[in-house]
Image (cartoon, rainbow, N blue to C red; front, side, top):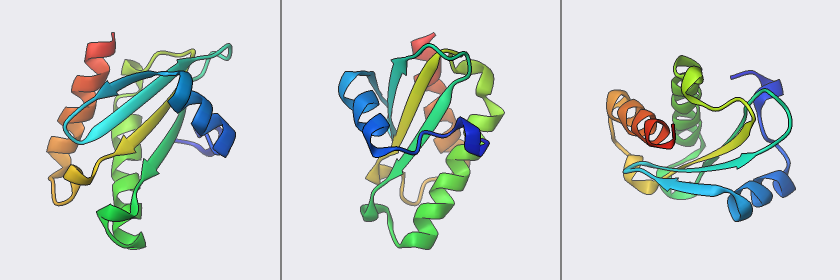
Length: 108
């Protein structure tokens, strides 16, 4: 996931979370909101309950990797916010990937 594909502003996060469509998985919450641009943009949120900064950054790297692998499952004209739940702590990468892909497939 490139820097140009990321949602960074606090206002944008709130807009997507408050007005967007919410989907739940075992380890993730996915919010999506339609927009006019053609490329999807992504935002990641990891709470402090998942561990210290090193562990939270590790989760973010894993999720970015999953997003890059399965970019074709995301609709082009949407913004996405992916919130990693507390239950993801100690879970294998493969299980995280399966959960996020299942959420995306339900959407399509």
